[in-house]
Image (cartoon, rainbow, N blue to C red; front, side, top):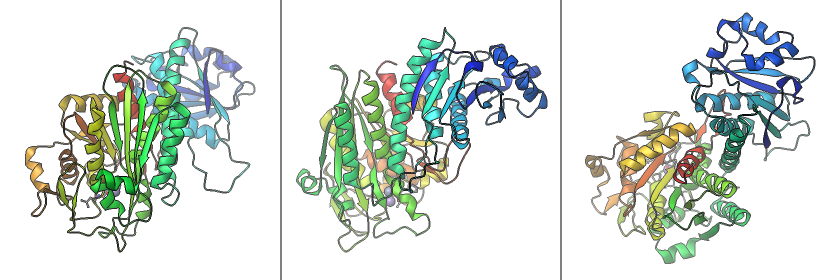
Length: 499
Ligand code: BES
Ligand code: MN
Ligand code: ZN
């Protein structure tokens, strides 16, 4: 999708679809905002009649369409919500809904306008950014594995309509939002691919392609070298699978100063549970168990496009988790890269095993901080549903920085405590730790397990099991993979890079 910012009277737009975002504060007294009066006279009062009808009040997710005789083929009003809800989140959501409607209407291009009236504190730069993020989110479709269809439409062009004063700022935001949207699209595409296509080596191929395109240093090691390196956690999970496991690293160098931010993404390309096998119902969703890896790769796409002044390392431990005659068994004890021994009491608690090795490996980069993203526990869905990422860590400042980034990115994080008392849950009779702490506090014991392998850097863990994919359509998001983490990581990195 190409995008640009244009200064043009709305009535002269030729696109097949013009969306205008309005909050309830824009529609009080049924008055058309003055920035729309030119269009309104062109439409011979149609917008006023929509407002008079009461069919559109500017409430969240509301839409109404009028069909002009000339100019844009369709003009859609899209609701932002109450005045106090005029936020980045509301705008991103409205842009996404508009893009989804444009695609549904068969439009290949669209224009988007946010009237200056009642914008509140949101800056033109932020509008540019979130409009592009939303448009990319709404326009996303995954048809790669279906027969080609000539009638299928794709949104190819997105124009943000600006006033002369706002143009430069909106353009700055547009570039950021477009780069984040491309990253999020990559993440969702990778997530959507099934386990027989998106294997660990496939993730390596994608990492190498990013490296080629943007000049990152990319390395990946397979089973043999993992053995030499003593990556006992990754090897344990991989030993039941014919697919070669991979430990992938990507290095983005954007400044001479400062230690790197290190992002770690769980890359289980299919999680059957192993010998502790999962129930058949919805097991196909376990192709999404590489969503953390997808978030890291998507973030690197953003880095390649924006080239911020910051250093970032991405680490992806990737493997399948399958049962077989060679698979790990409950009761087995393995030795991790860090050196601690682990009793495997449940082979379905595999994510923490591969992350333990990656976190241990992260030390060699002398990172400023490490953030991991992982579809780690079903328990996080019990706690937070699909509304928030579970956030844990060893550094309060990092945690609050991530929460702030999550708020602006519209990928909210909610903290869970890693109190010392919870550490006991992972005590093993035979090894240094065991890989499952039981049902109670399941997300926290998983977090504490990871913490056993963290040494010498501020660290935070994002449990994205509840937010990585959805099982039904919502107004702003199609059913399926969400690309969660890309916006959050991007916001975090760009803030650290200085905006
Ligand atoms: N990949 C799963 C977690 C998951 C569950 C992700 C549902 C997305 C949706 C993870 O590897 C897992 O199986 N966790 C177990 C841990 C338990 C055995 C301690 C779980 O949550 O049941
Ligand atoms: Mn599992
Ligand atoms: Zn898993």
